[in-house]
Image 1 (cartoon, rainbow over the protein chains, first blue to last red):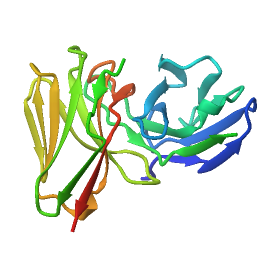
Image 2 (image 1 turned 180 degrees about the horizontal axis):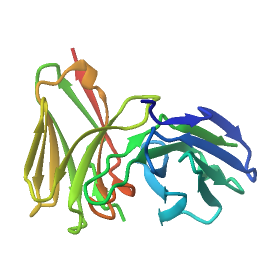
Image 3 (image 1 turned 135 degrees about the horizontal axis):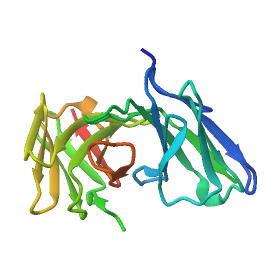
Length: 115
Length: 115
């Protein structure tokens, strides 16, 4: 059973550019969530996708968008990058089932630096 | 509005002693809490959880205590080992225990266990 993987590991962009981050969910998982972790802070929820539909969004502007594919891999897209977007971006996958509690399994993250 | 707070940025304990990490929350609707551990260059790893219908949950060396009236939870590690040195996050699902995808995280506490 493979875990959650993310690519790339590190990325450097300049202000105003666009970036796409990728996440491969753990096998069998149907839900993916994305988080932004600024230095010295806890992760902040960006949005969640369940069966390819957005299923909840945090306090992030529309220039943060996402996709979930039929194989449950996922992308996070950020347009018009700002300096404050520099952070570690984490994705987490889980198997959402009727009733019960699903556990989030996190990937290692992508470190984005905006210059 | 920080709904989950970890007021101690760091904690240092001697190997073999007890580590106590604290967490406070403000939203009385939270019904489920989790602790995650994070090593450098890795994603957060689920450690232990507790439902609001309980006041204690134990898993090996790790015990989480919940005091609902004080809106406070704590993680006890006994005995502490050098391999426990990591950043610890407490978290609560914004949507309740049936959907842990939107986790509200505290700022984290860096635990150092000295040999």
